[in-house]
Amino acid sequence: MVAVRGTGDALVLLTGSQARRAALAAQGLARPRPTGRLDRRHLRALFAQVGVVQIDSVNVLARAHYLPGWSRLGPYSREMFDRLVQVERYAYEYWAHEASLVPVAWEPLFRWRAAAALAGEGLWRGVAAFGRERADYVADALAQVRDRGPLAAADLAEPGRGGGGWWGWADGKRALEYLMWTGQLCVAGRRASFERLYDLPERVIPPAVLGLPTPDPHEAVRILLGHAADRLGVATAGDLADYFRLPAAVARPRLAEVVENGELVEVGVAGWSGRAYARPELTVARRAAARALLSPFDPLVWERARTRRLFGMDLVLELYTPAPKRRYGYYVLPFLLGDRLAARVDLKADRAARVLRVAAAWHEPDPGSDIPAPRRSVRPGRAGQPSVVAAGRDLAGRDLAGRDLAGRDLGGSDPAGSASDGPDPGSPATVAGELAAELAALAGWLGLDRIEVVANGTLAPALTRAVAALGAAG
Image 1 (cartoon, one colour):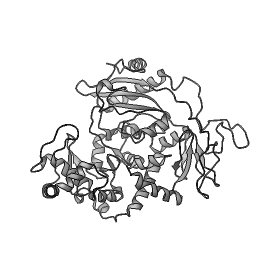
Image 2: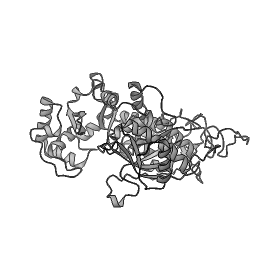
Image 3: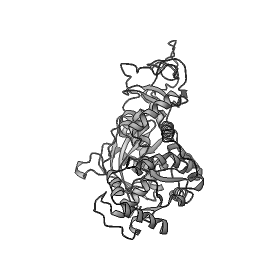
Image 4: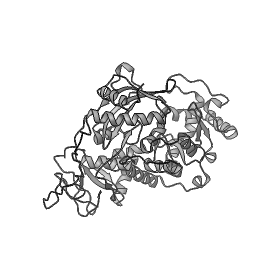
């Protein structure tokens, strides 16, 4: 391991490989999945690791909030996950990133957001306008939930009619969403149709949490920036703000404060424009040994610019793109192998036929063991900030050629990554073999019997052979 420690005014410069491995470790994706029985402790650890589990209604493979657990734990019980959230109330749903599940202990950290929404700030314009212009209807919806909750929008006495399409919400849905956004209601659970059920906060949030004092909004944002840093490893100011969807104007002054007090330090990453931030105690593993399919809503990849910076992948969400215009497919998952995104696959669970269908499989070329170092070093931060080495050296004091400060070749494993004996780990055949094993395990977790690979994409031929070799093909 190497660590961000040291003295002086020079700014730490990390290699691109180190930044990737720091990000993977922060997300619990730098090592193989646990073996043995999985229980509630693993799911609690999942929430501690990622902090935010994004929710999405698309169910072509599995609901998005189940997939981060698969990526990090393997075949855990989705029923146990639901009990942890809906019965034990370990997490609750709020607009923490997008619609997301977060540890319920963090509920006080988002009260400032609910207060801002009540003032008409930070929520969707149409929802804010509805709350302002239809105050009597909203008050009546709140009273109905108080008397008869939990309720779905369709359970209201006069739910109204939707306008069709994705966001053609009926009046009842608009009212309940406004009340949830402003903290007057909480999500109590979801029906099998994925329809939200709303109830009063005191009937959803545990009393021990609800009774906690409300932090000052500035302090809450500082804490959220720290939570983001813990789960990103190394991050730009934009990355940190995006993790909890903090407006730049809100995040920027608080970030300066956490840097000033030493909770975060400024670092540079080779190939990144501008500076980044990390915990001073950050450690970076020499290797990443994970193998996992990732939801397009996974915290590792949900911010597309960061995904390009870290992995060189332009991850495009084409769910809402007309089929003829899609490049990669409808529900495309990147495939993590080691410290790189080695492939992407368009997956569908055909539950009636009990088939995991690979509609397309694309091999991703290796972007190289590292991102080229910038021509100019990043300007040092304030005097007295913790730092380790001058630009051009890694966190262990090695220069980027793998030598120490006296010029000695250190040998062994280079923190920036090095070649290994045996088959090329990035070759289509190797990637296809690892991906086939991952697909077979995923199919088993989803209760599907076989895998079908459609002849579409650069990796499809090799993946077809690899799936057949496993005996998982239809």
